[in-house]
Length: 151
Image 1 (cartoon, rainbow, N blue to C red):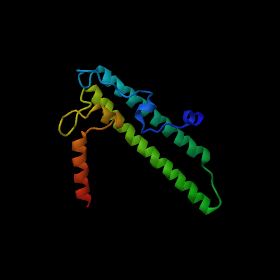
Image 2: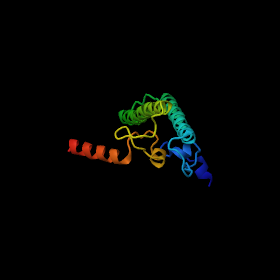
Image 3: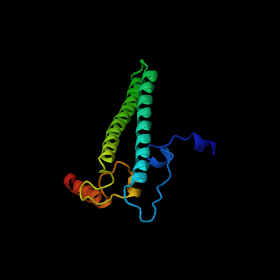
Image 4: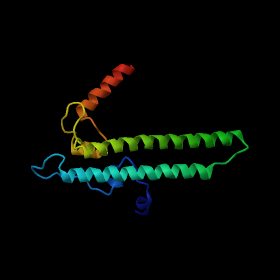
């Protein structure tokens, strides 16, 4: 039980990082109403803050662990470790941009609808991937097209 409390929360478990329970849709509730928008804003802002904290931690980690090893193998291992950290940081930076674009879509009242066909993306899909901009059908078609183009 204690291990679970100390366990680092994955940035891909959006509901748990924002301490939000899955949205319970009410009968005859309008899609992307104020309650739903607030639900996703909380998830997105918490996710963004977590990524920023992780990126700051990465920079501090590299600065603290940076050592000039005399052994070339030790130096190479450290460089590889730092490269991995920097790739993760870059991935986080790109994700933050997606989150900011999604928050902008919320502000413009364009959030939750497929960029391709315009239908509702759906609450559960958005809880699984809050920055999703395609419905599951359009995303599947896009992935098939990409596979065909790349052989």
